[in-house]
Length: 396
Ligand code: AMP
Ligand code: MG
Image (cartoon, rainbow, N blue to C red; front, side, top):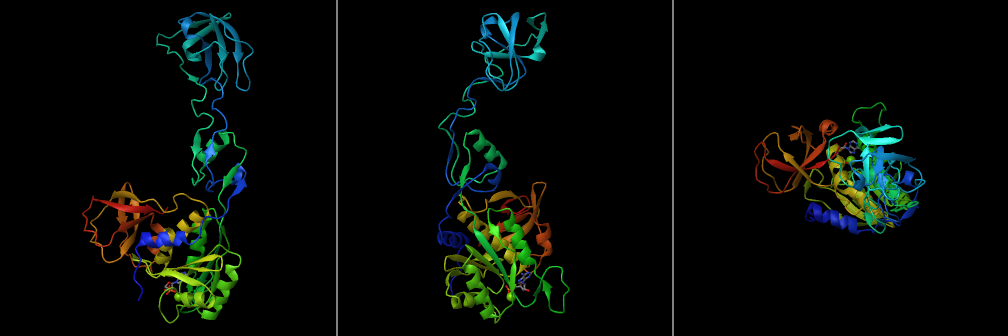
C-alpha cells in the first residue's frame, strides 16, 4: 500500500509536473482574471504634471491671504493658456493642470468672486500645496506597479492602463476537460431510474472553473468500463492541458481511473493524500496532458478541486501564488481533536464566527450548498473550545 502524502507535498508535486503555459498579449478588456506574465512597469509619471484635486482657484501661496485678480481658467484636458503672475488667481477644475507659478489650490467654497476679484471667505488655515497632486505623486516612470504572477483584478487593470502600457502580457489559459465516471450517473435534470443519481460533480467543477483563466469544455461522462475510460482519456489528452476525472479513483471493483490511465499509456505520479475528505486522489500525466483524478463523493470532489484542481489551473495560467490563502476566524462551537488525516470541514462563516455543519459525511451534498468556508483541522490537532481561532479557506 502506498503511503499517504501530506497535502502540501502533494500540491507541490502536482504543480511541479508542468511549468506554466506560454504567455500571450491581450487587450485590457480581455485581461480580467488572467495572471501577469511579466511585471507592469510605469512608462510615464502619474500625474505627468501638477494637477488640481478640487474645483477652485490656483494661487501662489506667497500671495495669501489675497485678495487676487482672477486671470483665466484651467480645465482638464490641456495646459492653461498662461502662467500665473503675482497677485493672480486662476479658476481651476479637478484634474486640470496648475499654471506655471501656482503652487496651491483654494476650494471654491472658501472664496467669493466678484467683478474679476477674488477674496478669501474662510478663516481656516490654507496650507501650501493643498489640493495639488504633485507630479509623479501617484507613481513615477520606471516604478513597478504590478508583479508578474499577479491576478488581474479590475483595480489592477486600471493601474496597468494608467501605466501607459498598450496591452498586457499574461499567462496562457489551460484547456481543461472534465470527465465524470460512474454507471449510476444521469445528466442533470433527466428522469432517474432506481439506482441512478444526477451527475452533480460535472457541472460543479465546470462552475468552479468558470471564474478561472481556463478554457473548460462541457462536462463529459463515461460509465465504469475501464476500456471506455482509457479511450476517453487518450482522446482528451490530445487536445487538453488538464483532464480532471471524477469518481473511480479508489480501489473498488468498479474504480478504473488508475488502471485506465496506465492502459492509455499514462503514468501515475502519486495517489492518496492524507486528507479527509479526498484520500483517493490521482495525479499523473498522459502525453502532454496532466491527469487529476478526483474522488466521486460530492464533498470529496469539491474539496480536492479546491485544493488541487484550481491551484493547478492557476499555476499553468501563471499565478505566483496558486494555492488558496489560509485565513483564521473563531469557532462558534467547540471542535474535537484532529485525527490521522487533515480534515477540511464544511462550515459557514457568519458574522465573524465559523459554524461547522453537523453532517460532515463526504457523500452529503446539502452542506456544500450552504458552505462558504472549509475549516482546516490538522493531523493530531488538540481539541478547541468555542471562541478559539481556526484556520479556514474561503470558498464563496
Ligand atoms: P466513486 O468515487 O466513483 O467511488 O464514487 C463515490 C460516490 O460518489 C458514489 O456514491 C457515487 O455515486 C458518487 N458520485 C460519483 N461521481 C459523481 C458525480 N459526478 N456526481 C455526483 N455523485 C457522484
Ligand atoms: Mg464510481
